[in-house]
Length: 284
Image 1 (cartoon, rainbow, N blue to C red):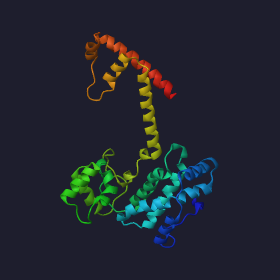
Image 2 (image 1 turned 90 degrees about the horizontal axis):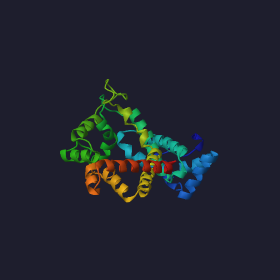
Image 3 (image 1 turned 180 degrees about the vertical axis):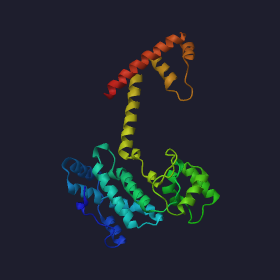
Image 4 (image 1 turned 30 degrees about the horizontal axis):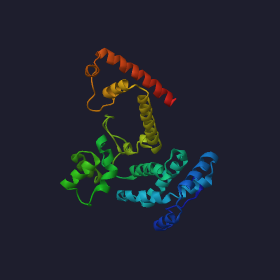
């Protein structure tokens, strides 16, 4: 996908006129979106790509407004977000059953994050893993422009799942000077520079959707496999492997059924083998 799409450029004219122009663009229905996406995928239809991009420019503007606290031109943020939007359109698969807007948010934010990290100022100290999320969340969660108070520190720490002292440290760093983008020091496992804050590729919506679909498929296969077992075998498997807090031992089940622990083990082993065969056949 290239600049031949010729959608409005926020660097030309006033930013407000660009924003108003994006609001005037039509919003696609789910059916229209799927139709354009298939035309792009199957026929490399540039006009279809243009329609998909144009109809989502307002989403980029909305996301860009969330990063105004970093002292960077909003027009530049929007341009970077538009690059992410085009990448999302190029990779979008209409057969996955999700709307483009949900898929595109990841790519839009990733481009904006990279732009911010290339241009913004931070202190010359690498950060730990626990502090990564603070960089892009702390400013939006502060209720005032002043220094965080103890209660606000505790609230933000709880909401983000980090320690209060890490909130205070990141606030100090955000208010500091320049920083090198690369990690400093030799401890690669615990040392992070701003480049590390870029979106994790594993967070890509397509990959997340594939993981959820695979998990659902495994769960469905497990249910079907259990249905093929006799009542005693199913009870043994559930008691031994599918109980979260109170798994039964071989001897406990032996007492329940009045047989030896070895007999319970044999039943369990045979049931597991049968289940594996059924699940393998379901996923083949």
